[in-house]
Structure formats: C-alpha cells, structure tokens
Amino acid sequence: MQPRPDGWTVDDLLALPEEQTLLQRTELVDGALLVSPWPGLEHQRLLGKLQSAFAAAMPAGTELLPGVNVRLGAQRLLTPDLVIVNCPGSDTVAYAASDVLLAAEIVSPSTKMQDRILKRALYAEALIPFYLLVEPREPVSATLFALEGEDYEPIAKSDNGELHLTRPFEATLRL
Image 1: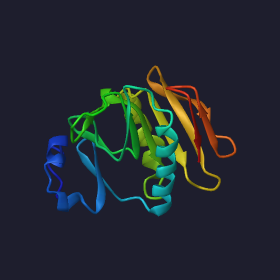
Image 2: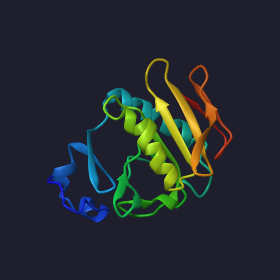
Image 3: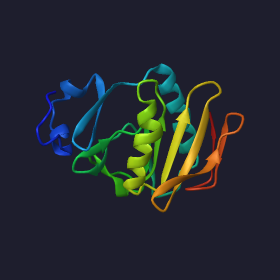
Image 4: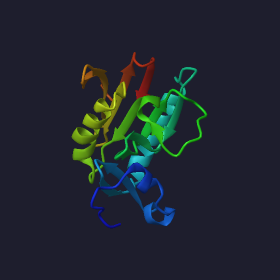
C-alpha cells in the first residue's frame, strides 16, 4: 500500500480489497496507516476469557463485539480487540465512536506503545466513555479507565487475576 500525498481516509481504507488487509491488522491515524500482525494464540485465548466474562453481565441495549472497526473521524479508524456498543444489531463496516461504550485493548508485543499511549489518547479524544487495557504478561493484569474531562482516569484495577467492575455495569472478569 503506497503512501498518499494527502494521507489515507477511512473510506480509502475500507475500500481496499480484502486480500490486501486479510493477513494483517490495518488501522488509520491522521491519514497514516498502522499495520501490525494479527494477534497470536495467547492473545486470542485472553480475548475469549474477556468475552465470556462480559457476556454474562451485559445489560440490555448493549452488544459485545471483538475486532470491529471504529471510526474516529475522516482519517482515523481503529480496530479495538473488543468493544461494547450501545446500538445492538447494527449492520455496519465501521461503528462511529459515539456508538462505543467501552473499547478494550490487549497489549501485544508489536503494539504495546500504541495500546498504552496512542490508542488511549485517541479513544479519549473521541469521547469513548470507558477504556479497558489488559496486560497479558504473567500475572495478567487489567485496568479500566473512565473518561473524566479530556482524559481517562483509572477506576478499577485487577487483583489476583480478577477485575471487579461497578461501571459501566457490574461485572467480574477473571483473567
């Protein structure tokens, strides 16, 4: 994929043939493509645990989705590891940031700085109310952040492999 003088747009990225994006995760930040490998098996196993734990606690009017596109503007498109949206049943190739209640990222070796710093800042700027950051190193740890003003503040941290949430809804995640 060649650079574009004016940068890529979300529409440009979504229009690419599937075979160009099938073998890698392709995201877009301010017109620049961020390309990374798809997550490995341990990452996927941890994602499965998160999905199971969240699924049992999901309130009506929400839906849990892994690996969907989230549009953060005309030149920003991210693919969180997991989102909880407030528009269940929508049929779209990219959810608007305003549809996302919670975005979750599981830190990967190839994207750790993006997950910890860049994506956290972009999700906050897009006004996504909650951000869950999961660190897969042993022991697995997780922190839930809530949007307070223009930035996220930690509101829950895991202890002994469990994360107890009271917001955005009550849940216990066993990591």
